[in-house]
Length: 457
Ligand SMILES: [Ca+2]
Image 1 (spheres, rainbow, N blue to C red):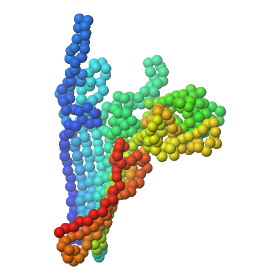
Image 2: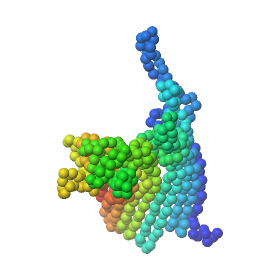
Image 3: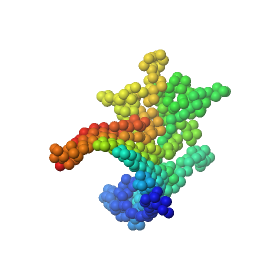
Image 4: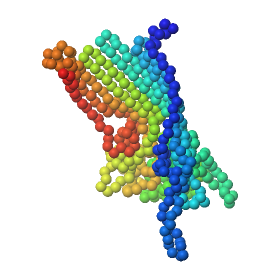
């Protein structure tokens, strides 16, 4: 045991369990504060063939309503070893949020009043947090390296039932595609549904064709067409026309033409196989949300004689943002509104009348420019879903502390000068302003430099 004590100075195993209540109504927008009461509103009704004003229930009350509750169980280890040089912390947690307030849909046969607020949804967050640190001194040089890592796994565990999609035979004997997504989930481009990430993206996907256009018997190849979903060449457009001639459809814009579906437009996958490329049944869950799955931090510090240096790095990965912003990557143009260089340099252009036009850019990464509106390409799809992972140098500081003997002569007890910089460097593929600040950022994060002098009398 003595040998071990020499190596490990501190070892703590801890566990905790707690339960807290919350009356904040989420994920639905309505506030749940007084929802145990029914809401009444003035409403007109017919009395002796004349309109009269009366009172009617417009939202059904729920006297059984309780707060949502979160149960957090946590187990962790803390250790300091090798004469305080190594520091380790590890935490594993399991958080269950139950009785989340929601307003489930009710059938119209229940009347026109809004459904009562109920405690129906559950959510699970599980994760791990690790922090490792090493500090040491070699002669007059001391240094510290510490890093942290966190992983979170989020799932909605109970909402409105399971998703059921597929072909069914309707009352007339016809084979039709049916989905209960509207009943079992809520939201739009991001949705809440049982078994998936909270507010997971649910989107159309650009059609990934094989690049071939026809089958060996001369018929149109339904798995062919443009490889990246954009109609780029005359052969791509011919394929679209042949598909339509063969009875297939493209949505949201179904007809081919300059003002409709044309060169430089995206077309979407027919995921459910109903022959319509890009209808609502072709939306899929993307396995990502705006919440990071992994976060990292790294802190480095060192000092030698009077000099001191420190640096802080941070990274988040595993989150995606649906981003389609005027002036940055949205290719819809308006009178009096400028377009960014990203759009000017990367939007598709093809001059049909002159295929050799040097201005042609048929490999442009963004769709063609459009005037005022675009209901084909600039709509929600995974084309506009960007990996928002980033690595940032958040802070660097270099300082110098003057030797005591020198400064005591001028009546000071301590004198330190320093220079520091913030947000100096970032690596990301996200085209927006700052992925750390989220999608809707109106003012960019600033890069800052500072120089300072600290005098203690
Ligand atoms: Ca379809």
